[in-house]
Image (tube, rainbow, N blue to C red):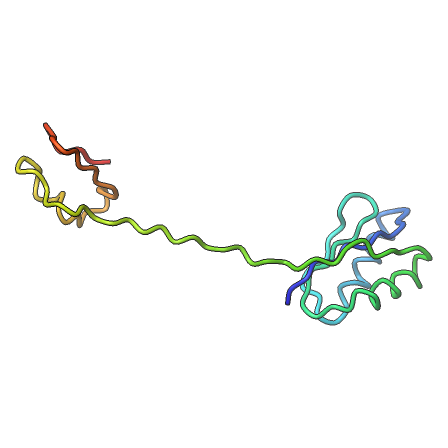
Length: 120
């Protein structure tokens, strides 16, 4: 299970931020480390022990507190299904409309009483 851990660490300069990121990066299971704002360290990984990581940062910086541990949900990919028309094309439509084989004709709209063929 992938998790996002946010730890508040008192960082006085950029060098301290770099050192905090270095400590977090060598922890087991860490995939990415980033600084959020001035004093929040965001760690994303799988099977990371948040308490041990917080203690390691506390040894170096004297103040580190665990703010949150959340599960990272993967982005869902939505499938869009485009169904073709259920009725045959009107008599005046060009042959490329049904079934559509060209790249330009992605969506075909049929009107109940069309005067011309409409392609989008």
